[in-house]
Image (cartoon, rainbow, N blue to C red; front, side, top):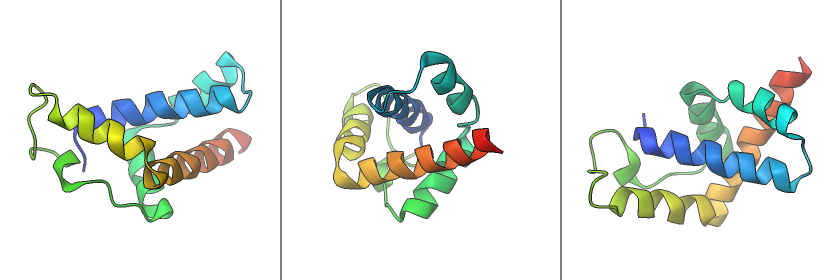
Length: 97
């Protein structure tokens, strides 16, 4: 659904958020093992966020740096933080099961 760099950056931001919340490295690794692209898509849907259209597959070239800038800007925004929170909620449910 989104550019592959979006999924990679979302996992990085999620790792940082989990670290900030005090989770250990093994706990974080276990959670992020479950954070595949479909899980991130699910978090986008559950959070009600709308990542910029430029982040969809085939909509932007990564070489010019604009896609990375757009991803970082989104993930730092309140909507991006809502996405990270939704993803963490999903991951916590997955490892608790």
